[in-house]
Image: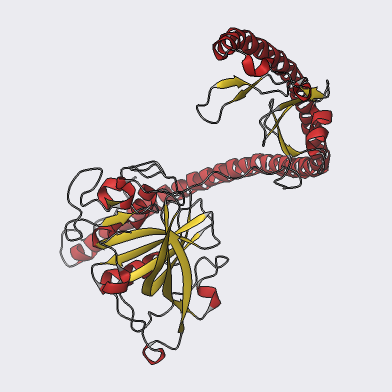
Length: 472
C-alpha cells in the first residue's frame, strides 16, 4: 500500500447529515486493489450520491448537472471506467485537468470485473468542481456507450490486506522514485498515479505507456475472458474447433460441438480442459503430443500401461535418457504428420468455404437483380406518367409556338401596310405644306404691294398713272 496515499489520515471524518445538501445522500462502496496473486488490499469509500436517479443513469447520457454537495472536498471517484482503457488513455481523457491532479489511484469495485474506478485528489476545490461539471455524465469517447460517472468522495478507509504469496521487494515496498524516469515521487512537482497493483508512477511517465499492464510487475488490469459455448453460453465441458475456432459444449451437455461438426465437417476438436484432440470421423483421440505447463515444450502424453495390474516393472526400469532420445527422434516426424494433416484439412475447408462464398455471391446477385427489377416495375408507371405529362406539355408548347409564328407574320404584314400608309400621308402632307408656303409668299407680296400703294397715294408720283399687275 502506498504511503503517499493515506485517505484515513488526510481526510476528515464524514460530514453530518445537517451539513449535506437536501438533494444528496451518502452511500458506501467496497473496493480492493493490488495483485490478487501476491497481496490484496481492501477498503471502503463513502460517497455523495445525488438522489435523482436520472443524474446517474447510463440511459440518459446528458442529464442536467446536479447541484454541488455541501461539505465536499477536493476528492472524487470516477466509477465505471472500461477495462480496455489503459492508464495512458485515462490520462489523455483527463486532458487539461492533469496538471491539477495530485494523486490518482486505480481500484476495483466488488462484483464488477469488466470495469475499474479511479480515486482522484486535486490541488484545490475549484479544479475539483470544474472536473465534476466537465466530465460527469459524459461519454468516454464518441464510440463508447459507457458514461463517465463522477461522485464526490467523503472518506476512504482501508479495512485490511490479504497476502496470497510472499511478495517481492518491488511489490511489497513502495519505491521512493518513479520506476520509469527514476525521479523522486513528489506531489508538488508532478501528479502521482498508483496502478491497480499498488505501483506508483508520475502521471506524465505512465501516460506514455501504451500497454494495459503494469511496467513493473506486468500485472494486466484487463483479465482474459473465460471461454463459453457460443450457443448455450455454458462454461463446462467445452470443445474448440481446431479449424475455425468455434467453441461448443460436449455431448454430455447440449452437444453443440458435435452439431458444429455435422454442419461444417470440421472433424477435429480440442478439449479446452485437457488440451486433447478428438476426431469425430474416427470417433477417438488423435493427439500424440501435448504442451507442458511448466516450460511450454511439446511432450508425449502419458498413457496407462496395460500390464501395470500384473506387476510389470519394465516401465520403471526404462532408461530416462533412452526415452528422451526416442521422444526427440519422433517429435519431428509427428509434427510433420500433424502439419500435413492440418494442411489437408485446411485445404478441404478452404474449398468448402469457397463454395459457400460462391453460393452466397450468386444468391446476392440474384437478390440484387430481383430487387432492381422490382424497383423498376414500381417506378415504371410513375416514369411513364411523367413522360406522358411532359409530351402533353411539349405538344401544347408546340401549338402555342406555331400560333405565335402565324401571329408574327400577320403583324409584320400589318406593320408594312401601316408604314406605307404613313409614308403616303407624309408625302401628301409635304405637298400641302409646299402649296401653303407659295400661297403665303404670294399673300405677303400682295400685302407689301398694297402698303406701297398706300404710301404713294399721298404723293404726285403716280397721279394719272396706271397700276399693272406684275407677272409671277
